[in-house]
Structures are given as structure tokens and as C-alpha cells.
Image (cartoon, rainbow, N blue to C red; front, side, top):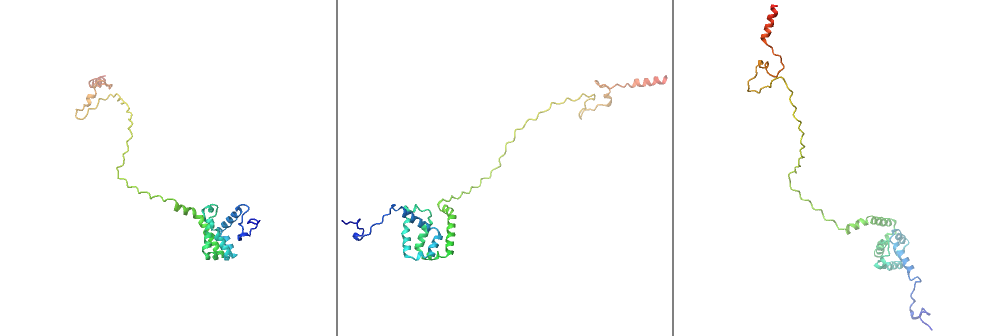
Length: 210
């Protein structure tokens, strides 16, 4: 009894290779390799050891393009590896230039500046620009508003002070006849002593006769 399983060479077709772990180990190895291409130093190492001159290795790089499909791309943590993979396949001058340390340093510096400014550059294209603010129209000229005056506080008025009683007669306003000095003598209500001229003259005569 002969069949394909007992005789793998029967029928002229080689048996299909089956991974013992259902391909998980191979998946991890290829994922690690393709993500190493995100490092310019690793590309520099491959170029110096002339891996890019081997057609079999170039074919292996073409096989790695399946990582650009959406169902595999979600596992990649360093997306720059897909950029360098496409650049290595399409540009032979880039493969040759990466053998020089200067080109490696240049690629590494450009990669650093991309990471540094990536967020700001991306936000410029994603976020909508705010519309320009409208210029406010000048307000019409208005008279300055008058502030209300504070309520006046009534000032307390002091009661009138009574004038002191004087022995002098009141002064008559202009236009009335002024009192003669003799009128002050007999003004009633005054305490001034009355001088009788006749009594004074009699007293003098009496003193002279004595």
C-alpha cells in the first residue's frame, strides 16, 4: 500500500511544510526582522556586509511587503520600517549609499527630526484652522454719561444766639436822624448817673463862701 503520506515523493509534489506551532514562531521572527529595518544602523550593517548585492536577499525583502497589508500592519510598532523597506526595494542608489557612515548619520538625524516634529506637523493638517476673528465696528460717539450726584446731607443749623443786653441805645440805620449826645443822658433804662449842671454850680459857690 502506497500513498502520499507513506511516500512523500509520490506524485512528483513535495509535501507542504507545516510548522509545529502553527506558524507563530515564524510570524514572530519575520515581525522582528522587518521592524529592524526601522533602524538606519541595521541597514548600514546590511549594506556593509553586501547583503543588498544578493538577489536572494532582495527577493526576501519583496516577500516582506505583506506587512503593508492592514491585517498585518496592526502588529508593527515602528512604522518607519515599512518606509525603509519600500525605499530599499525601489532605490538601488539608497542601498549603496547606506554603506557609508555619513549616509547612516544623515538618515538617523532626519528620522530624529521627524519624530520630534511629527505631532505638531500632523496637527497642522488635521485640526481645522479657526476662522479669523471679525473686527468690531467702532462704537458711535456718545456723550459721557453723567453720574448722579450724591444726595446732599442737610447741615444742622445752630439755634440763634441771643444778643447780649447793652446799655447803649440801638443804632439807627442811615436815613433817620441821629441822636444828639445830650439824648444819651436821660435815656430811660440806663444806669449812667445823671449830672445836673445846676447842682454842680451851687456846690462850687458854697465852697467859695465858706
